[in-house]
Each structure stands twice: as structure tokens, then as C-alpha cells.
Image 1 (cartoon, rainbow, N blue to C red):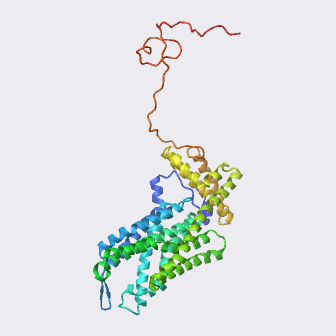
Image 2 (cartoon, rainbow, N blue to C red):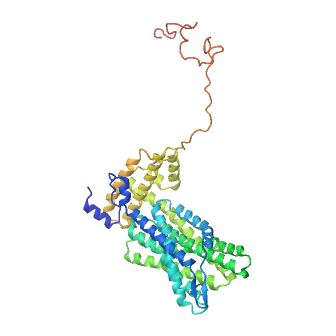
Image 3 (spheres, one colour):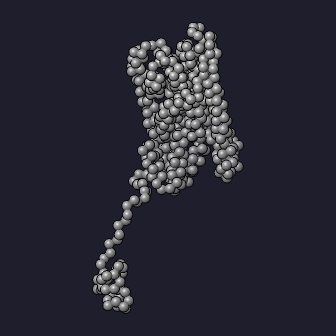
Amino acid sequence: MTDPVADLARRRNDLPLPVDTSVPLPRRILSSRWTWAVVALTILFVVALVAQYRMLTADTPVTGGVVEGINPSAIRTGFWMALPTLAFWTVVFVWADRYRPQRLVVWYLALGWGIAIATFLAINANTWAAQQLAVAGNGDPTTSARAAIFVAPFVEEAAKASVLFLIAIVARYRLTSQVSVVVLAGLSAAGFAFTENIIYYARAIVYASENIGVGDASAAVSQLVWLRGFWTCFGHPMFTMMTGIGVAVALRTRSKVVRVLAPVAGYGAAALLHMVFNSQVSLNSEEGQRVLYVLVALPLLLTLVLYVVRQVLKQGRVLAARLGDYAQLGWLPESDPLVFARQRSRSWAVLVAATRGWNVLLATVRLQRILTELAYLRDGQVRGIYDEAATVRARALVEQAKGLRGLAIDDPRGLRLSLPRLRRQRPLAYVPPSYPGPAGIGGNWPAPVGQPPIGSPGYSAVDPTWGPPKG
């Protein structure tokens, strides 16, 4: 039975409750809030994507005519054109979140939110605002630059970053470092850019195929794909990562003022950068865009990359310091701070475990996750985020780690991969026999060790090496 007082203390600190392993696994899966969150949000994702598809393929009446919708064939082609960019950013962000990787469910929710929900909110809000601000032109929402400069940055950044606040409310305990929040922000932005690129590519395909003045339709579409899918593909992730940094700072501080101002400042920086980007694309000349790209955009991107790399390296130092606290108390072996704080040692342990069986691999990965959670739990205590309830959680984690050490690879130093031998073993070289018989001349048996066989000329019923003690 669980302690209601202890459970209440954990909920106040947003610490996970102990898992009752006596309950069957299917029942635990069905009773998990993450399972139903995935089901509910997946249905919501599908509905949002279907609504956008119908909106894009439908004809839009405007003043003096009708704007034809995008045909399904162009959308399918745009999908395959936009997919490599999404795959690249997904691999980059998932790789960056290495020390304490999020659950696949959390990554899925962040990416799906950007692909479906954020784009659904943005396309409706931007279209309505463009119609209100389009005081010139033929009424086509795509002909006005005001919405792209003054409306889209605030709407799109709020739509992309809303998933961060949702995860922070539901599972704040999972967001233990700035890297984790920045990765989720980047995944949401990459998903948003994926859907937006599909729309842009599909529109370009339709426009280039219907207007002879474009010239080579394939070259025009290819130029747009290179522009959005390669040269400026970092735009949306870089903007939303600003908000992610603000949210991460707010989650790891005790100051109530910082908790309010940090996300607001991050969102303001994201919207400002987005506004500057859209204004230069809409109003500046191509030469001016190239100058700003080289002198402003690339240095800013490099600065952000260096910041994320620094935060990744900082996680190793945090793990070494906090696991060292437990090692000084005698709760953990002295080798843990050195082994589990270095990414190279952690990766080598996983490789060694992978060659020694599935159970060893699972135990090793589980041990690394437990000790990483233990380190961040201690870091939260040092920062004053958690109270005494974290100590109870820490003791439970130490006990779980102790139960895995007999099977898991907890210190891979000096160990080698247990790979199967591919070379054929050489036959043993037997000593040639010195007597006739099956193993003698013409024989093929190995020479026996000790006395010759019974009946052979050298056989004796008495051991020839026996004798009285010497001396």
C-alpha cells in the first residue's frame, strides 16, 4: 500500500509516483496518462491535418474571381521534397538530447504538435489577419506582406511554443535541463516548417505549371526547395529555440520573477527574429538579403549552435558533481561519477552490453537512465526546486540501481566487445607418438597421456614413476 502523505508530497514537487510492478503490464499501459495523451493527441493531429488538406485543396472566392486550390498531386510531391529537411533536423535534435533523452512519446507529441496543431492554428489566424490587412491587391491573402511581418511571427511562435508550456504543466519533472527544452522546441519548429514547406512547394508546383512566364518549372521549384529546405532551413528551429531557452531558465530557478519574465523574454526574442526575417524576405532586394544572410543570420546560427554544444558539455559536469555527492555519502561507488558523466564511457558501456545479450543491454540502459535522473534530482535539490520528498525518491532510485548492477555494465573500462569469432579455429598440434599402435605409425589417434595402452610393449602394471621418497 502507498502512503497518501508521501504521494501528496511527491505530487507537490511533480515527482513521479512509485510504479506498482505487481500490476500486469497491459493494465499499467492502459492506466498510464501518457497512453491516453498519445491517443487523444493523435486523433487531434489527424483532424487538424485533414482540415488543412481540405482548406488547401478547396477553391477560395476572391474579388474578381476564384483562387484555385492546390491539387493533391502537388501536395504529395511537396511532401517528398520537404521530408529530407524534417529527417535531418529530427536526427540532429534527438542526437543532442543524449544524457537524459526524453521518452519517445514526448518527442512524438512535440513533433506532431508542430506538424499538425501549430500549422492549423497559424494558417487560420494568418489567413484571417491577411484578409483584414489586405487593403491593396485583388483580395488574395497571399498578396499582402503586412500579415507576414506583423502577424505571422507572433502567431506562429505562440503556436509552436505552446507545446512547451503544455509539457511543462503536465510533466515538469521531465524537463531537467536547457538542452531537453531546446530539443523539444526545435522538434516542434521542425514539424511546423515541414508542413509549411509542403504548402509552399505545392503552390510553387501549381503556379509554375500554369504560368508560362516562369520558364523552366522544374528549375523554379528546385530553386525554392534549395532556398527553404537548405539555405534557410534553420529559420523556424532557431526562432522557437529562443522561447525554449526562456522556458528552460524558468523551470530551473526559484525566483518567481524569473519564472515569469524568462519565457516572455524568450518569446519576444523569437517573434522579433521571425519578424526581421520575414521583413527582409518580403521587402529587401536579393543582394541585401545575401549580405544579411552572411553577416547576421549565419553568425547568429553559429552562436546558437555553440550555446547548445556548451549546454551539452555542461550536462556532463553537472552529472559528475551531483553523482559525486552521492558517492561521498557512500550511496554510490566512487567510479560512478567518472563513468556516467562521460558520454564516451556511457556509449561504450551500451556497445559492450549490446554484444552480451538483450537483457544486459536493457539493464545497462536502465541503469544509465536511473543514475542520470538521480543526478538531476540532486541538482534540483541544490537549486531549491524540490523539498524533502526528493530524498525519498533518491533512495528509491539508488535501490533500483543497486538491483541492476549484477547484470548491467556499470564500469566498461577495460572491457571488450563480445563478438562471435568468424575465423575457423586451428587444429591442435599433437605430439607424435613414440610407440606402435592406433596412434603410432599409420594411426590417427592422439597419443595418450601417462602410461601406454594395456598390451603395448611399454606397458607396466606398476607406475614406473613410483618409488620411495627421495632424500
